[in-house]
Length: 231
Image (cartoon, rainbow, N blue to C red):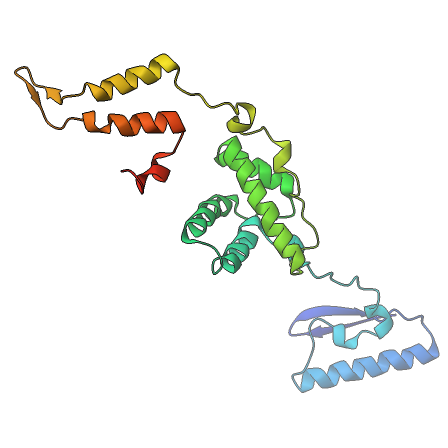
């Protein structure tokens, strides 16, 4: 059964979803009177939902709410993770985290759970090795998020290990000076008398550094390690 009526010059049609019968006509009449009273009292529902029977409303497909975990972007997760860690890490680590934040903000609205899209986005804006480091950091962030119920999974687990190795991993042997090169460097320090200006030597002489340089060569000690005790 379908009822039709006009309101403010617009024609409305209301389907009650009922078979035409004596009883159902009474139902339709009751709906018509309710609509008439609502129009008079300025309570008319122009969506007509108010006047439809519950059986008709139950056929409407419910709207499924969007899961916030699925819409969380890589940048949003990283901001939450780095903010959480900021109070327990050193200043240098905070700066390190901030460098990745500048990368992730360029990914705009890519969901963090879409790991392949995130990887592709990173490869467009930075080097392969920085992408590798960024994916490793996102893996740590997702591990933290999973622990605290922010996410249900970590799609970055092991992802960075599938990428090309760092140079130090493929070439672990240091590119050291040869013995002849070492002797050249030492002789240059031992014989340095200043800068020749055409008439004589001027400026500082570096000869007094020769024993220190030799010590570093022979021990492999780093300058920063030797600094407190020697320099």
